[in-house]
Length: 313
Image (tube, rainbow, N blue to C red; front, side, top):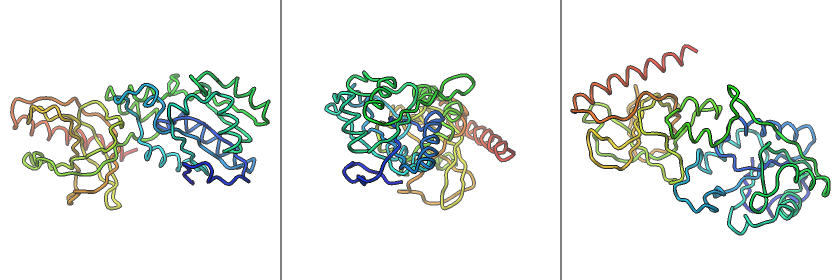
């Protein structure tokens, strides 16, 4: 997959099949669209293009620093690459771009820059100034300018239409397994291991303290989770706490700490991808350090029980 930020770098001689969207989460509904995109490209000998936007339109139009996304742009790009598309075109989203009328978007972006011969789009897609145009308008433009439009219906899980909004809600509620079901893969956190206060070491549960650079990355509800990671070409399981360590400190600063099972190494400055698998419990303030240590022992036992069931599948 080639990642393109300057559309002038696209070969003007190629013709394309395009899909458009923010694709936050690249969930099962998005994957349905991407599968159809790649299959259509193969059948028609067109190049497959995903046109996405960064920053997320809500960040620009609502000017809200508290907006959180399922994926960073790097995570989104990595998942899209796995889908087998030829080009990922990242359009910088600005207020000026948001004011582009729908027909101008079609002419300037889809036709002049992407040379689209077919557009495959989700059932609920809107575009153009104030999101005023929908798929019916796109079909009219297709008839006018000579490209085909194909609509992809919603992807349902247990009769519920999958959406990025529902996944964000599940993560905010700590419902990690529901989120993973909708995503079709484990929700992950990517960050760098930094030096902490060595509290885990004192509790005989040394932890890797994860720092996430992107302020817009959604962090799930505080609590204890079963996780896994790939470290030194080995799959390593562990338990992770997201919270502010209320038993140890009165600070409100959020920490993300992982204790890995059967793994010891100096991980400082190491970039880690942490897959979140299962929620064990809420974060809790204990009456004593001993009570906390006892709970950590129980958390480890519960984690290992969950992992053993995974290995049995």
